[in-house]
Amino acid sequence: MTARELVDRFGRANAEERFQALRLLVPGKTESPVLGPFLLATANDVAEDDLVRVEAIRAIPLLDFTDPDLAVTCREALFRLVGEDEDWDVRNAAGCAVFDLPGAQDSIEPMRAMMAAEPEELVRENVSAAISLFLRRS
Image 1 (cartoon, one colour):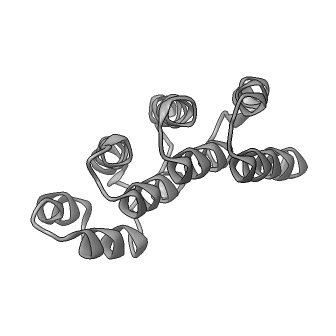
Image 2 (spheres, rainbow, N blue to C red):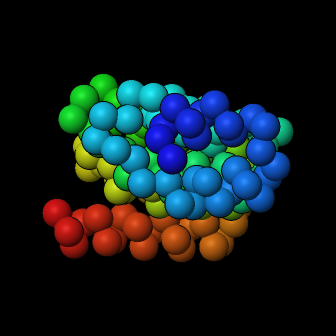
């Protein structure tokens, strides 16, 4: 399924179909300009099923980040989700996904500070592990 087909069909699909479409998503190199804003909008949609939102977040690092502005936009949006979203699953997925994006080194210290205030232990542990893995890869 192309990015345009995914976007066009998404609103007509039920939550399970949206989840599966995102889970199976393999973005083409030229589809990132369409998919980036779509995935971010889906991740930010509090009316959307949380599993669909998490899959949208997990798909973001699969994008082609030839355009550095897309990486910055995605990192900033994910960072906001970590700090502001009420759903701990979404915060967890967003916090981990930040460290699979280009330029993530700029997010290490701010994310550590944010994790100090994170109420969910699982989120703190997972994001800390994502930071550790990122540092080992770097």
